[in-house]
Length: 145
Length: 291
Image 1: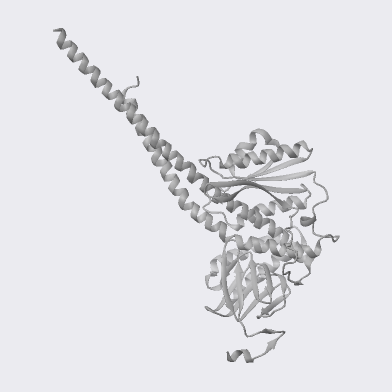
Image 2 (image 1 turned 180 degrees about the vertical axis):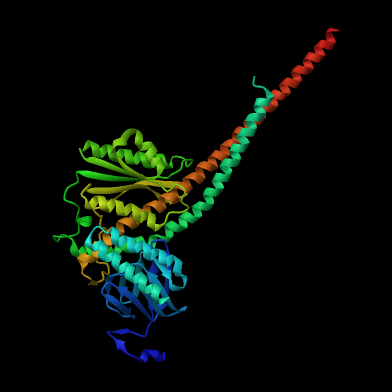
């Protein structure tokens, strides 16, 4: 393969594809191999290539970008969850995940309203911060449509 | 001797019962397939979750300040027992088996002098426990009129349980449900939710060294409540699959039994009919002979 001539990093070939599983409590949403996966980590978006160091992180509501998959580029909206990254595999356990194509504005507006109520109803500071994060993510998503 | 008309009525009754049980059986069979698929689809998430928690908990174990959901409150005086049953009957001994296990647990806990609180999920469990433990039942949650149970439903129950835990209303939480082994075998199981039991990481296995973001403690704090939801969700899904499995086999034997009853009744009906004809003939003949 010509591509393998490009950078070798830490013994792993970064041009190799990395298997990616997106799992929600109700089903396996996606399982495929991609060039790169971008995840909405709690500390900001980060991209994962093959050979990434092992990492476990929580996710905040946001968009997962799968690029160079066998089915082309795909984007998913997730409402929090967490990701387990090993050098050879990425697994995302999302509380709720849907393909961006399935996101519809009416349902989204309703979710935003719900989430805004959650802010008002939040009892602890941590709950409030989480609710605010959710609203922000939903608004960003709404605006990007 | 019962009259012919009453036999005919009874045969008609049993025939319609058979139709109903047959229909119930077929409905259960088709729902079972879907429920089984749902239970299987939920498995990867639950497994991954416990694996990650086991991994993270390994690092935090024994440290002071480990989350209370993992280490417990330090006492076990108050137990919360979540009894998950079906909302409907007509599924053989399914509900009774779960309730029997729950009763044994509760009785054992009471004898040890613990306080027991009960949370019923599913109407049938409440109906059976109410007689004996009415004062201990905090609440009943049912899913009547719901087509299928989503993760949101489980998350709602989990939220309620966690709120109670945060208020210090109990120390140990256990969920009692029926594990779906196969269509004909459902095993009532008690599973501890809080404090979270940690499966030992196989020693010598290729254990990954992970980077944590944010740190282990925070990840655990985020994961443990989610784990409670997912365990409840899993229990509910297994219950639904078990319910339909039990219903299918119960309705199958009911259908077969109805068939037997119809056969017996028909035989009796024909005998009675023939006996009456014979009697009438004898009457006519002996009447004719007397002339």
